[in-house]
Amino acid sequence: MATARTARTVVAAALAAGLTVTALAAPALAAGPTAPAAPAAAKKDHAATRAALQAAVDAGVPGAVAQARVDGRSWTGTAGERGGDDRFRVGSITKTFTATVLLQLQAEGRVDLDDPVEKWLPGLVRGHGHDGRKITVRQLLNHTSGIYNVTEDPGFQEKVFGPAFLEHRYDRWAPRQLVALAMEHAPDFAPGTSWKYSNTNFVLAGLVIEKVTGRPYGKAVENRIIKPLKLRATTVPGTDPTMPNPSSPAYSTLGGGPGSAVHDVSELSPTIAHAAGEMISDSADLQTFYRALLKGRLLPKAELRELTTTVPVSAEHPDFRYGLGISWQKLSCGTEVWGHGGGIHGSLSEAYTTRDGRHTLAANINADWTGDTQAVIDAEFCGTVPPKK
Image (cartoon, rainbow, N blue to C red):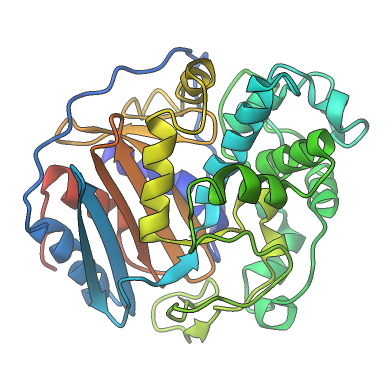
């Protein structure tokens, strides 16, 4: 398994059905953006990407879709039962939207990322060793807070990720309820001393936005990103469990092994994810967002520099680093890309771009038990054709 893929899978699968996030040990954190490499030349026919989509379907995924854009020219590919303009749940790609809003608020002088969480959410991050007075907003955004990941809570997993999901799929979870569950567990490490992916971090980030703006975080995302960029397929569903059209069903085995029953999990309560992973979008909108973000259309230079200041995930994975709600990875061909992966029931997504925004990719498969989304990234940016099995 490729180095970057191992680390990226940890990030992308945070909300995937039946999966939990594995801790990755890390030494002292390093600061400073990594210099991007020139993008690799892509074949205009996108044959490798097409092959990667088909490989996912051959592995048992009902359908796969990807769209790429190179120097202003777009290409869309599908395999299996998918539409090229399908909307899908983007999972943890939501995190980049959340982080962008907080950086915008900092640019306006309304919040400082080095503020302690306690300043904005007094008394909320307390218990079993957690202390919001010692954790900064920045540490929420780059996953160095040490705060326990709520999606690892056994009770939460039983209701949300296993077979009991079918009974509880429409349950509503308040964001403070999610944080309270996390506070029942000890932190993973002292703030700023290591790195571990935690969805609780971004539930808290969403609550900070709400405290600063006085409105739901989703309204800030809509007014500051979705509307200005005219992302017509992108929504923050809130409590709405349905999927807009056009979309294809999302399928899950709910944590079962090979041969397990497959369930349609398209409808679910997005409150299980809140600002960590509830959003819905399509391949075109995600590319527009990341291209605009990395080219400086959404953030001033100082905040963009902070967004792309990365910390290591672990010493074992130097080709994958994490910024503020965005990840950087160096692919096997040397191409460096920025973006995020996302996993939620029956939906695994990727959205990445070269630093200059000239080459972008967004892809989704509508299953969470098989399929290799990292192979789609390697195929598009490196021309790597996945081996036939």
